[in-house]
Length: 383
Image (tube, rainbow, N blue to C red):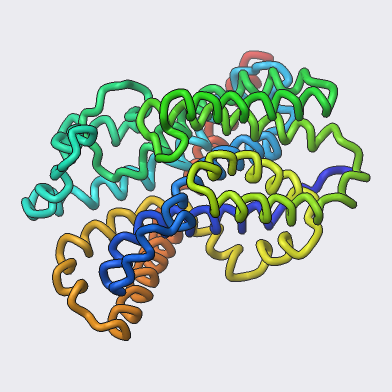
């Protein structure tokens, strides 16, 4: 029986990952608004940044699912078409958000000063935030390619920069993975990639924080490779594996939840993420049913736009309304907290429909036109 072409719950899990990242960016302000300092000690809220690692594993898995068999050998036209579609997947929305920030940077020096403030010398690079070199670096999405920190704009876009590196490497990695004929070998290599990542994080003292920049690209690489290898194993394993899918997804959720009771254990969540994605690929069980439900699927669809805009909105609200928000009573604070969350969802939805989707359609049209031109040139040569 062929593997499923569409795996809705993987769209849903992308939405949950984006929501978790949102929480880690918002909980500091929310704790002030709600006058709940205990939130600042929450391991669940603090570790929301690990949703990015889930994104990276999922990206490798989905790209293999979509492009399976296209990269058994490297053909220029296939590689070109892949890069065209990927370009229109990330660059237009990133550019739109970046340009939307320009008036704010030019007209609100107080916001710029807030973004450049730092108390810890380890964050001295923040002094260059919202600089012109940083704008160019973010526009090109190359900020994770170099150790030079020229200044951050939309901070979360570092993940897109790392993802672009993954796209560049994907044809070669996919061709290598397609030559693996044993699911056992694919799973062993997947585990080795994750173990290497965890060891590197511990060795570089990043097991309990959120390394970005060049180290973020390292995180991307090992997670991305594990996703590619995970799909290869999924493709090679017999369909009888599906009877274990529900247990695998439930076990993965329990494992991830259990790590959140211990300060450093969440660094191991990458193992839970890979198991979760593997189990969901078979579309069985209660976890799959939840993640394919309507609201979660909707969140997954807008997740990229929601992810790319929420941090900017939280920063603007904190800068412009922070003092007022901190003096609200609990009832008003709850209302405002949900209102901010709703605003982020609304902006994400608008960007999804007005920027992200049209950009993807444009990318497909560009690819089709290039293919049509190549066909016409080929026909003339043979005439």
